[in-house]
Image (tube, rainbow, N blue to C red; front, side, top):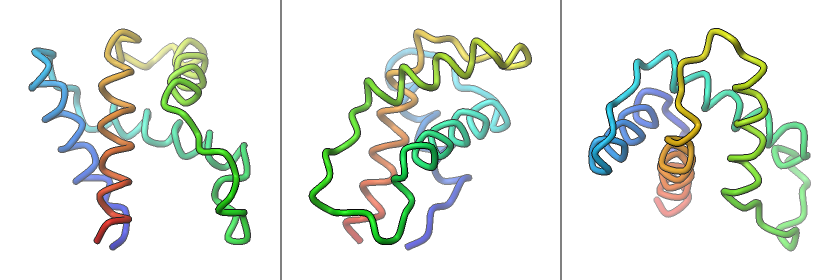
Length: 100
């Protein structure tokens, strides 16, 4: 199954609400999703011939990267304290696609 941005945004907002946080507008979360995929690209994780034996990326590495990118993006309105929930929900969504 293909990655569906709308479904990813929905899953992230459901996770935020379940943690007592306020959901974000789609555009804000799509910006974070783009940052996650930029991280993958910059680290060669989107290569078709990448080794399956490579070390797995941790959520902490992605959170650190997205935090740095958000600090540079003056228009972003994502709270850094929400990033662990957002990143975890996005990774869970990706993993759910692998299990189909």
